[in-house]
Length: 151
Image (cartoon, rainbow, N blue to C red; front, side):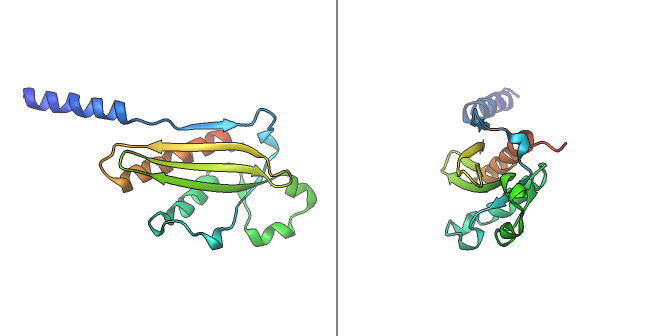
């Protein structure tokens, strides 16, 4: 029984030590309420790791769960000037190592090119890269939903 208690305490300590921070950074001058549309940029020319290709799908799903309406690259030219003023370009990055996975999603104003928000999801137990990646995706999705909540 003592061994189980020691093992449980050890696992709890590992979890507490290995927890990484998920957060959102918003530009001081940004008015996030004005944005209604988002477009993942350059998705057809993705040159990243084949193992992380599903990040794009999961990030798209996460944005779909926010109030932002997804617009394809090809459809941007069909938007009115007013709609383009409400458009955010979305870029993402994934970093993995033996300890953690970090997924960052940046939202950039279409006209100015200025980053207005950056959502970061991090997760790491260091036991399973795919599990850490899935945890980071869930956390960044939560940050996106909090940053752009449905009305």
